[in-house]
Length: 181
Picture 1 (cartoon, rainbow, N blue to C red):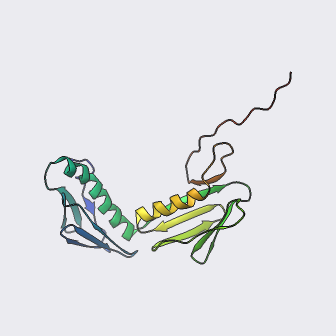
Picture 2: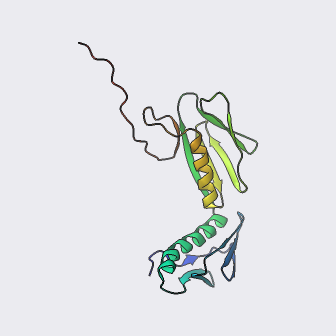
C-alpha cells in the first residue's frame, strides 16, 4: 500500500466536494477546481474525510495511487488557503513592480518585460526585489513562477538574476587574472 495514498484527507468546513465517478470538483472560498482522475483510483467521502483507494493491485494502479491522493489534497488546500511562491531578484538595477494586474520586470534588457497573470493568479511585490506569486491552483502558481524565473535565470559567476526564495545558486570561479612573471 502506498504510504502517501493511504493517508486520509481532512476537508475544512468551508470546502464542498462533489464526486461524480472519476470527476472530482472542489469548491471553496478561494475558487473552484476540478480534475478528472484515472479510472484506476476511487475517491470516497465519509463526512469530513476523503479517502483515495485503488481498484486493484496492478502496476499502474499502484503508481497512480499516491499521485491522485496528492492532487486531490492540493485541490482541497488550494481552495481553502491557497498557495504562494516567492522569488528574489538579485542584481544592480534589476527590479519589479506591479502595474494593474501585470508584473513589470526591469532585468537589464533594452526593454521592460511585462508578464500578464493567468486566471486565478495574483502578483505582489515587496520592496522592489521580492515577487510573490499567489493563487489557488498549485500547478499554475508553480508554472507562472517558473516563467518569471526564466526571464533572467540566476547565472553562476555573479549570482545575478531571478531565483526562488531560499534557492542556493552554485557559484563558479571566474577567470584568474594574468599573473606576474
